[in-house]
Length: 509
Ligand code: 2AM
Image (cartoon, rainbow, N blue to C red; front, side):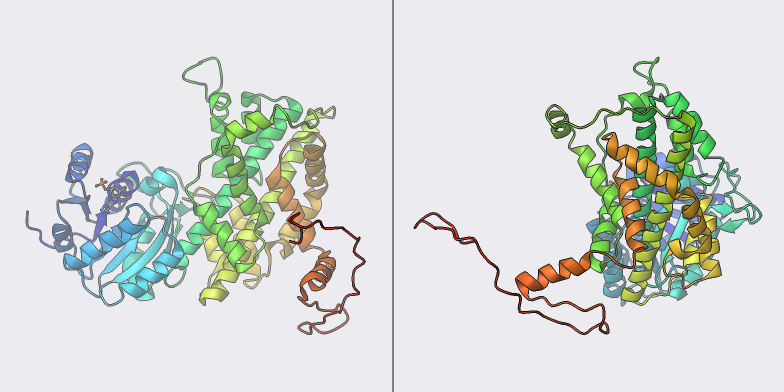
């Protein structure tokens, strides 16, 4: 089939995200040329959707390239990794030119995007755009985090702004009445140019890291209420539903309320959540965020803790064995139910503020490392709708960075400072209760440790520096000298106990 250039954009990869994004683009009046490596998948999609002229079927990459108007724009939605390079090369072989834009909308590692933009610069404009919101987001409005050449962004912007989730400017909340063929009119789009090369994918990765900790915190709240108060899923669902009316109003709290009232299809008298195996999976973006935090020396400990909590959960069989041997206290709480529920709410809220503080601190550091200029108010703004971490709370972060774009840490913003000041007694109570009752609440605990560490003018690292100097002459700075001046002490010879080493005993490490 030969093609004339009629499409506004081409899309490669018709798995569910690609299909839904194509339908979203078509709903907004753009013509989308669609291609999938396995042609049958594309044909099935076209048959099922019976598109009213918005989609152009392409059976080969050559047809796809020929079908798109110049400067050509493409979206790649295939598995992250080698497939992105394979598809980009196919596009180049099929006639993509230097000014054509190839936008990778998958969950690619930002350093891969930096490399690709550089490697393909002579052949095409490689662009990286984070997309969040899952399947429904792709269909009815995702949050889009575009990064790449600013000139390319000018060409992509009309489509990105059209298909993104929309925020009601009066309420700051997402407008959620998009139905197939009837997209939302007006509203503020959840997309903004993030920065050059890998910036979009980097910010998407941090979004996912925050998503990990947001989910872990909700899990811990659920678990503490279950174990300390003996609450059952329908009762818990009501609590999460109530929390969703206040500061914690968010997609993840809302779906938690929904999940907790879902009956089990196998045992209809039971709740599904009670029959789901407690072993978490992960695809790697939380790990990337944590690894990057370690690489940059940024204390995103709560985000990393959420990744480790999933790792620990995955050791299901080992935990079952260990539970038979390792002893701890049995949960026993005798206090007031409502008081504890609201204390857990406060613990969740304070920990969440710390988690976001860590995510934004990471982005601050990355912008120095990569010489990006990130607009944190705008990043918070585009996370208000479409994405998995969408929440009322993000409006407050947007306001905080609006007040002070150079805010060093979210905790220092007057609003968040006041929130934690008000709620921290309850947060500490919940962390204490989880420790004394033997209930693992690693995210609540590590967030509190972060808060207390961050607000400490002094920490015990003086002793640690002394130890490093003692055994390795690593030097130390003095509190009464300017920073950057290093000292070493010839530590007095230690008094070692006399040990008789027998020949051949293997001592002396
Ligand atoms: P397929 O249907 O032919 O497998 C998710 O895996 C999507 O990415 C699918 O649409 C899949 O196409 C596509 N995909 C994965 N690897 C690919 C590759 N190397 N080239 C082209 N498409 C690929």
